[in-house]
Image 1 (cartoon, one colour):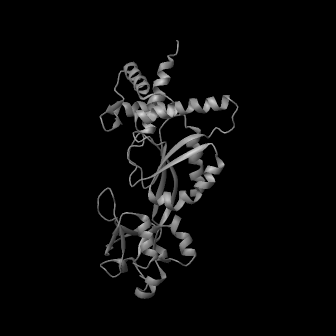
Image 2 (cartoon, rainbow, N blue to C red; image 1 turned 90 degrees about the vertical axis):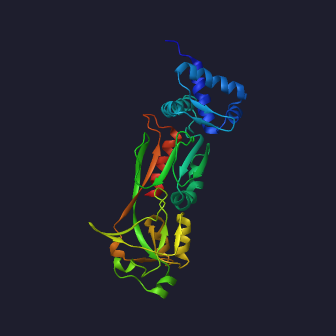
Length: 301
């Protein structure tokens, strides 16, 4: 069978449009005119028999069929690029542009302090990091990989568990000096302490508080005057002595060790929260994605 090179050209054009967000910017990245990119995509749509993009005067987006097609072929396209690099004898297989989707907790407290190390390790790699409250459409938004806290929702993406970190109850020394320490989980209920709450984006309500000791869990009717949507704000308010917060041990432990936070109810700190990495499900994982997965596993250990 003779391979139709126009098929590969069309797939490359689709990938460029998804990553760039427009036909014009895709053309600039590929060294082509906007009409040339449009023709390549149109030929591919005709060849595969589906409409890949919804087009309007103001925006473009993948159709459902286009999303499924792109999700299937983009890792294969990246694999071809990696194979070409290896064939050329270039040792720097990890190259190109990696688009990463992260939540604020991971991005601010774990990833950003170590990004310089990652970039130094792979000097031919450029990284775009998007900090978002929700993962959204990884394929349609052109991201290669995402890292999020919380249990994964059903999807076609490949989910990789990186770690489970404890949930710890903390307050600043200044708060403890003014209000004392809770001695039991029940001491946190019914307004006996100022609890700092964070909103669950999925429900619009504050996250419920639970404290765990072994297999036993106790629900806490936490209440307080401050409700935030960002973990950075939650941590800052806790450090400032505004109240008691439930934080993740992975970023709170150094502050506890330094004496800037007090770990309260230490016997009730057995609840854990997972951190997952997500990428397109394919037998071929692009080298740049695999490098990032290995790196975040390393820094999360």
